[in-house]
Length: 281
Image 1 (spheres, helix red, strand yellow):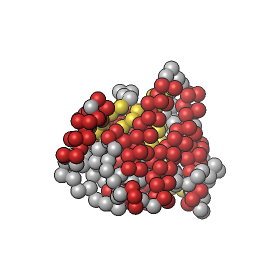
Image 2 (cartoon, rainbow, N blue to C red):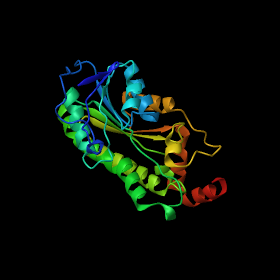
Image 3 (spheres, rainbow, N blue to C red):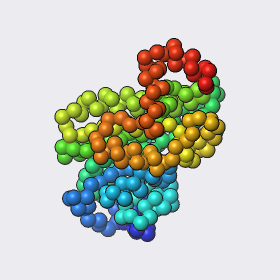
Image 4 (spheres, rainbow, N blue to C red):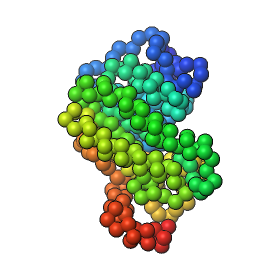
């Protein structure tokens, strides 16, 4: 184990495609105190994930931070005792390796915040097949596999919470974001189904549904956010909503709260919803 400022990190394998750090880390790190809860946050290199990590750290939680960019993870961990677990969740074994490294580091996970994700904007007709696979795998498949790897430990401990970071795109469908919308809709359906399965186990499932968020997400997807409304919210506001949802054991939370309305209109009166969509865009 090497130390990078106030946080510590498990050295990843030489091949970054192999995902999170190997089982045998150098040195030994004592487990967190029994009274200090543990959160694993993916996508913690930037944006919502980084803001969420900082919020949990401020509340006294022990953090495991994962992302692809080690330098940015170090920035997120600055001033904390977080353990860094650089990982590529797009790799075939990425979720399994990350789960193993996380459980080895602390022995338990009280909360998983699955925030890793990517976007792609443009007509579906022109979307390369490789990008279809990338968006679906990282935004949906990787989250499901990571949850599957961590759930046995949570259920065995009799408690825990899975926090899935969705999107309003998954509630209403967004033009020229068809695959991203599909992935986030799948995540929402997964959250609902899993919540029912886990009833009585002590493990809860929260779906966080933000609208546009002022991060580098839009630049990375290849198209900036150009709408005048709704205005992008801050990553800190989403992080606060994640924290409140965990603290209050909420099933769903929208950021901002009024974003629950379009999905309800679509479900109750789809014809009216589509007419409004054609008018307002």
